[in-house]
Image (cartoon, rainbow, N blue to C red; front, side, top):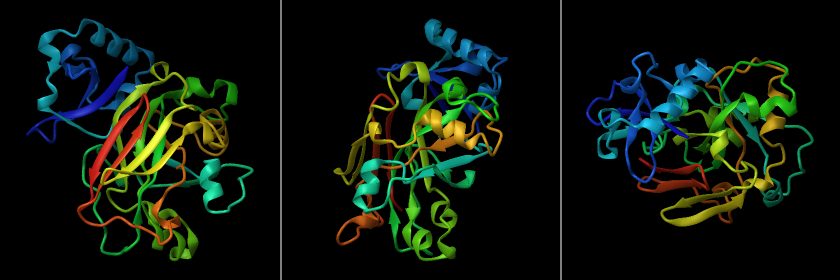
Length: 291
């Protein structure tokens, strides 16, 4: 299934959860299908199996009165206001090679504030405080149920699904300011576009063998495969859950492949008017204008 969070055009405050019918056939509004269903993805995930079963029924039945045409839909980030946004640094072998960095022996974990999240087709805002804003296409996954000290062999049962992320990064603040702590450079408003859908784990053949690409103004700048991930989904879930309890809706960004602007010669950074498109096979495409 492809679960989406949306509002109707002109009704920016009315967040809904739906199921994308595919092939441009619109979105089934879960609240319209079953009034007992919640209005946000996080609440749907918190319902567990009951919520997923209802979404599956809605997709199968798709009553006409519950289907919203795509022309009337504004897609939002699949998750709004998660408890955590957990990120993994230096997690692609080919990305380590491009900067002559050693392969990490354990996951490098940092975070973004949830306020950085923006929609799959919303603008990326260049902050006045940075002159070195860069792109990073990433496979993201979302936690579906609560857990602590999760074993690798059980980890995928805690994952609700996958989505596309852009870990937008202000390299001056990440690499030269703030004591080399990455947080501030990663967490300006709009620095975490997500979407377009939460693709359930059963709908992704192998999350660790997917083409992953980033285009800037139509030109491919990143082009790799998630088979280059050093620490895969199961390892990341097991590792992070040693330290914190994972909750439904928590978002994980798994790292970026080579081709980022900062390691080009000369370095290239985003400017007003650019269009950044992030693509992951089987998961989707997000496209954000830089303003």
